Length: 286
Image 1 (cartoon, rainbow, N blue to C red):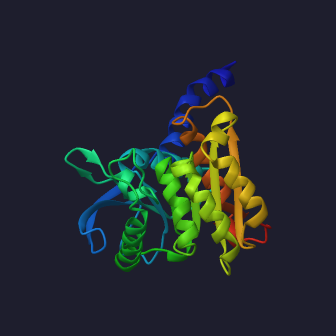
Image 2 (cartoon, one colour):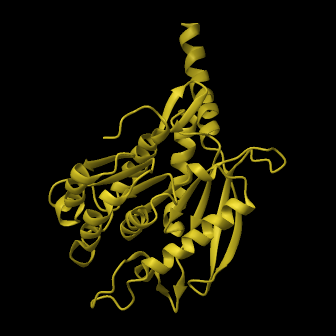
Image 3 (cartoon, rainbow, N blue to C red):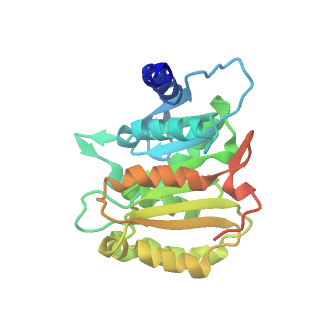
């Protein structure tokens, strides 16, 4: 009886200790850079784990987050949890890329879309934003202690569309690409047509690509089913890819599952001490 009482008393304390480990805070450093291509000053946040010490010679995998003003908080939480669970490396830093607002207008439509369409006042600036992203990656790698060969780009919805656009046009800019609900229906599935042409030409890459979405009608209507079919036939040999669908979710709730499963797919635990990018293991691509 006494043992049962003791366990009952200690359980909340043990739970507090365990949760405090994986819910530790990140340390955010505001930063910015001027983009010669966008001709704009772009704000970013560089976020390190709490125990980050700039005096230690430790390099960090970099998790680049599009739509940073919305997606960063969840990214921190998931990375903490998966790091504690030994699914991803604990030495990961986040680069949060918030959208630019001009006269209260969010410029993500301009930055993330590959073509200009009539029903959007601003669109079609993905190529310029990709050039900015290359500037940003070079800036981060020069200023901060990064494992530049292990960077990950994460985007949802239009951000997911842009992440896939980036892979198709600059496949080696990032090691891995995680997308949730990518808006591939944009401009009559324009990017799927690009994928069909470009995928067979991508060679000598070793990357991962994660795509997740709702299932059923939305899976088809968003153009994701079509891209899965294209990947099945034309994915490069070195691309480790997966498409996952979730029932009974919304466009926004899918984000929770997508980033969690996407990170677990991106990394592989090869021993108790070592977690590496899946593309660097002997596991065959899908």
